[in-house]
Image 1 (cartoon, rainbow, N blue to C red):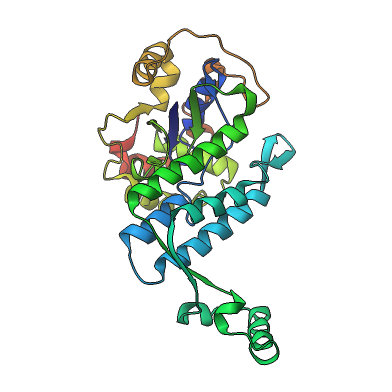
Image 2 (image 1 turned 45 degrees about the vertical axis):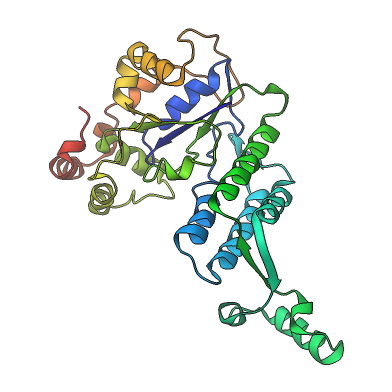
Length: 327
């Protein structure tokens, strides 16, 4: 199995590469056009790993587990757009159950206790339960099982079980149409591509960069929820802070592409993609409920900023982000 993770900044055009690979007959796409963020989101798998092994402490692990399971429970119930105006549950109903099994497998020590960080966060119902158990039922504090303290096995065990956990999720969502190549839309973090994708089987990362003028124009046109679309000065500072130090590192697991080159010379860029992934250049394409890949229809997105941005916004971006311009 090969897991291909397509990464980009907000509105970078990385969706074009994901759409292309998803439309190929030799690829499976578990979540359609939706992003897969379990590994990289705050509260997700990489957060849990870092809290355990890169920031050790008596209770850091337990606090991270609580946040992780809370995140997974909400993720299981959340709905995303399958197509326009149609929202569905993105994950199977056993997602939380599988997450609990994963935690159990990597847990080496578990006991019940309520340390300070947990005491000051007790809910009213939890406080009532403790009082009832202590005063009426004459039970000891650990018997209430209000809070579990856990310590994990070593990193090797964590990564092994995390890989199994992720594969179960992917294969479960693919179903009968399973192919050996799986493609994920933003299944890692563009600012930390190697670390956030280490939980996959045979991960290959494709990053896509785009001219910042068109990125800001796309953000602004969509009023993108996770972006500073409303202020060009904040956008410029955000972009410089994130990307002035090149994140597109040279690594055998990473292929760096430019959105404009993909559109203007797709055949050449496709050769790079196919060589990197060891797949055929010519393959039967398919139409799905999610995608209808058409490279020509996407070309209109080059120079989009000319119709969307104000003159002073264009001037500021061209002056302060000059080295990031792609044309």
